[in-house]
Image (cartoon, rainbow, N blue to C red):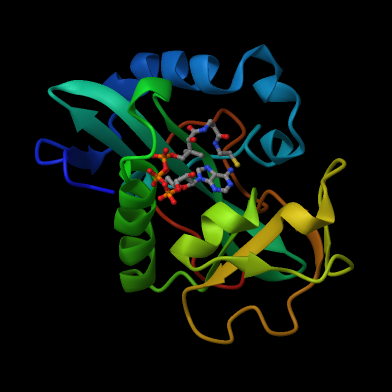
Length: 186
Ligand SMILES: CC(C)(COP(=O)(O)OP(=O)(O)OC[C@H]1O[C@@H](n2cnc3c(N)ncnc32)[C@H](O)[C@@H]1OP(=O)(O)O)[C@@H](O)C(=O)NCCC(=O)NCCS
């Protein structure tokens, strides 16, 4: 439902958004957010700056989505997460609008696939589908039913399996390198 979203504005995340986004993520996920298995793929990783987006309503940050380079086995792709929308502004289409903006851009840039850990009934609205549970090994426990993929290039995930890892050469300080990992890494 997007009827009351005329003033919704989505823009690329900038360094000066970081504090507001941290507050939003704390409010949406609570202190346990750093214990999630997907977080192991964000530690020491560098987010793909151009794909991370922030949503504003009436000038205030109301949602955010981030993307990270990962390898699945020997293939490079993206991890989506976290995605968060302010609790008082949910069910208005902000989450889907954020994902659509980023996924459209990722597709244009040639990224082959996006993986996430989340609820299929929600993320299938943005084109994600379930992965056979035996195909991926995360750095920590995940519910296999929540491991989802969106093939931005049709068929790009066919035959892809193995450990999900932070790509080699990622700047361990987390400082921006200003680029994306689109090619096979090895
Ligand atoms: C998940 C989240 C980002 C959705 O944002 P949102 O802006 O409310 O989502 P949208 O408005 O785009 O979509 C809302 C629709 O999705 C449904 N939906 C939302 N979360 C869902 C879920 N986990 N499972 C199934 N459906 C879900 C809503 O019921 C609503 O359905 P409707 O259109 O039939 O009314 C938001 O609820 C949130 O920030 N949650 C806390 C953080 C979180 O769990 N993030 C996801 C991590 S996997």
